[in-house]
Image 1 (cartoon, rainbow, N blue to C red):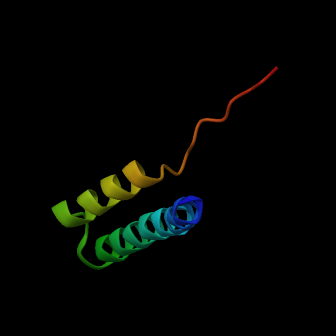
Image 2 (image 1 turned 120 degrees about the horizontal axis):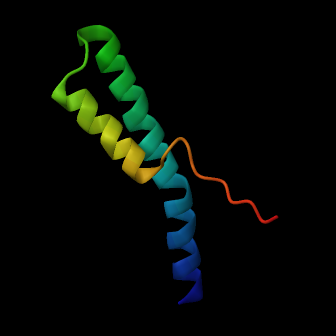
Length: 61
């Protein structure tokens, strides 16, 4: 049971950032070729939702 959870965590720790990076790269490629479109904006929004580029950093002191 614990091994299954660890495997799920490992897949999500790798898959989510890769999916966000892939969507962001595809969006940039589409915008470079055809200009901003609804699809490229949707890909960028999806990538930002999965993994924002500018994460807020906490200050502890």
